[in-house]
Length: 157
Image (cartoon, rainbow, N blue to C red):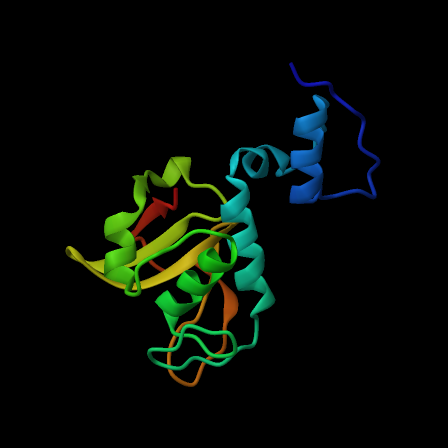
């Protein structure tokens, strides 16, 4: 059972750490956006935070951090820092993740862009139909709206 607490209007977001701390103590907070975060695995939320901390890092093909990244290098680095291992390529990451439907996606899930059966890009779902990713040569790690309907979602165990 969740205890409902009135949240002052100036508070618009509950931190992930706060949600998990409240879950451990048996109390809860009703706040916009808090429920999906509460169900995301701690390692996925940490990986998302790591990717966000790399905002502005330059793209470099084949790089997996800590200062330059390609798309799968950013996801690999983020999850490795969060204590989970992933294979190197976007296609292989798709193959080892647990596939989830768009309606079931959570913050910290991987977002795979594909043509047919071939995965060509990966990012980390940030919520609000946005991903953290390292897009291409000449670009920087950034938060961006998902621009395609050709995406699959995967959860890292």
